[in-house]
Length: 246
Image 1: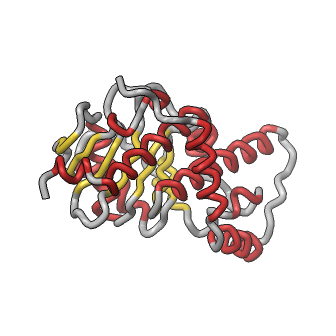
Image 2: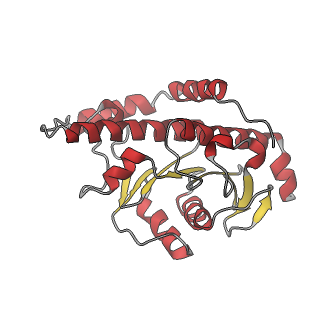
Image 3: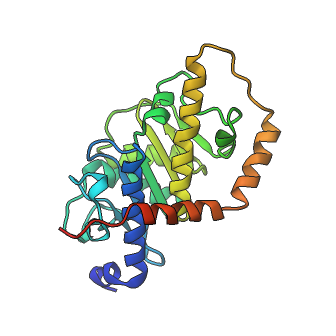
């Protein structure tokens, strides 16, 4: 099937709308950084192709027609914008190696702050929000500079080792998943959990974690019912309509 047919199909149009909404929501929630970082989603049933945000646009201004169709080698197959180089190496490798359909990478403030600490990541036994991530977090503890080659992207992807949340030392985070709405919900609440931990640590008072078994029970409760994630995403759709095409 030609790439332009993929891009214009109803199913892919819906994915472009949802990916653009996730980007606008991230800007709205203060999770974006300049015009950097990337969200991507693989095309269903089409090997080695995925949608990603373009280079040079602020996330708050991105609509479905700004989303770019690309292959894992970085070739732009459809769309009217370029793609930033590090996106090609990180996202291509994570999609290819982990098999996750959705890959959200950003430098959101509180999660990134925790990547600068000795622990490198969130403690999933502290707040209720944090508990949903127990047994889901990978830590890439070695910072190696900008991801400007295949080896660095592959190293990051391999560090995820079957997990869907990765804290990248001195860098940022990756949240992956099967659906855009669910992955964005995980990204949003991950930052909230990190915010709560950073604020609690800033008090200088001892922190009081819960038992890991209880945290795992809470995680199963949350993951077993994702309607709240879908409702949140639909609320964002109402609040953050797509901008008029430029």
